[in-house]
Length: 286
Length: 322
Image (cartoon, rainbow over all chains, first blue to last red; front, side):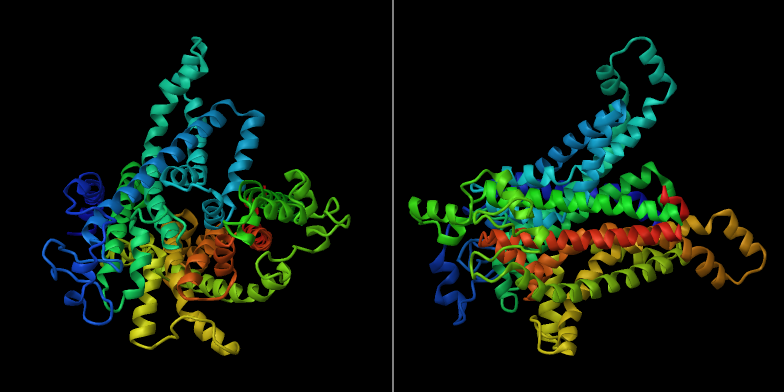
């Protein structure tokens, strides 16, 4: 496939990847052979499977555990399937929070302007210069009952700024269009104009950015989990599986490779979709 | 020249606002939402122990008073002003060392790692971007852009883990983590982590550089230069790359917070005893004075970098002075 063909099929390939990963996360757990936190010490960590180094049973070593066990004797397939739920929930809900906030702020500041516009855009500048991960780990450490929802909200609250900027610019542009001015002169209320005329026009860039946001949310969640500040154990996530598996990288590389591959595929899929959508809208980028 | 000066003053004022806001946010998080005394005394501390600790740290006062005290505007619990304005950042709750001392000891290490990473990512990014733009539409372009796309999608820690295991541990090309002894040894230990950090960052620069260069090379004055018979190399570097570098300089400034985030993960993987690793350890231990002190130092450093990048852009491009 040439460069052209590849470029044109990126949205499709990305979509297929995203759908596949989402399917694994949504439907997967129902087909999971075991619970993600059940320990099978005897079968997966017993002497028969391991030899002497405390290496868990590997791929195909024990029937009923196709991908083997992890360092605590838990079924890797079950954890991969359940872990996807955490990563993708964060991706979707976190992006939803960011997109909603970015849309509201962007449309308000773009349409109304004035003092609030200046103030909120200053806030955007301000938040863009904060060290993201440093703030995120501080929040995760102090929020006493850190769960998946608080994680989504936090990541959303830290990621709406770029979207707000773009929506604002687009709103200002749409506001100046003749048919919008006509609607205004006919007495349509600002709320009506924003939702019937502005919103449909800004949705294009929002889809593009939302897709890239989902990718960066997956990366952020996995990084936090890798640092031990994500969703609390024993709930599995791809990032925390990687953290637990890395000490055995030399003996059981699949404990790092499998969750790593899932993260990579998900992020790759979302990014591919975002890039493809952007180029479809603005061919100049090619 | 005065427009540059006005620009510099305005820019410095904004930098102070950003630093103050970052400190306020993290101070509120650590002292208002979290409780440093729980970190100091452990989760099983008795209420009266916590109470005593709160009084000792001055946490029985309102949060705003505590913050003003931290900034050095109002006196602390002992009636003496010792805060940010006086150049004091307090002492660690875990080991009692002055925060300034701990941070100053580690700052050069992170500066070494971050500086090398920045060097790698700008040089590599610009090189890839120029090559892709020159070979636009050819297989080389596809190959380079696919590589940058992979780099954007790969989690930094995954790349770090494999770099540590492969080139360092299995092949023995690099030290397996750590900081080393002596200046040259520090640099040797910094090579692999900064290459990992730089490879991830380079992708963004490469894509920006390619886009800008493709746009610039199609501008009228470049076509004119070419038509006048200037050599293609000269047109590319003098008219193309020089102009396309302006947004790259801006990106360096905007990119610094990201470099800090990258350093937290990379330092953890490579056991590099810098500010990032300190941040993670102190956050987990709820060592509030260190965490807030780190935010002061990191946000000042990021703002200094930002201001420098902005001034460089203003110097390169008069339109940016507005």
